[in-house]
Length: 134
Image 1 (spheres, one colour):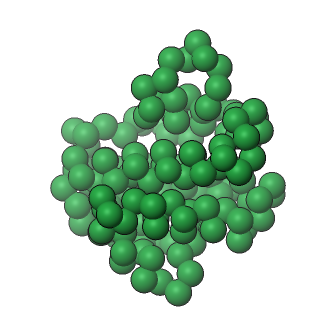
Image 2 (image 1 turned 60 degrees about the horizontal axis):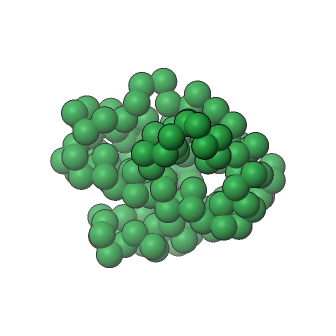
């Protein structure tokens, strides 16, 4: 499982940021061989764009020439936020990324690639484990 400790609203922003960065590094490692490094970064960038209205704090990341999934900017942005806001921003970003990934490659392939990470995404969406899909 990617996340050893679940991200919760009660944790401090720095812990949320650290766990979020670890998840994104894992996603990058898993998806880069299939989508290419640029493909993963493009999905990440698109995810940032789609949540800008609700989380303008992410403009700091997007203002980089080409935001990349392994940029230290995510950690910097999440650490500066109140814990509840950092939690919500992280969840919004990961859910948006996951939705875009499923649209791009389909649920079945996304489930195969993410394997143990599917539980993480299901838990964040409130989806029952009985469905067996990401």
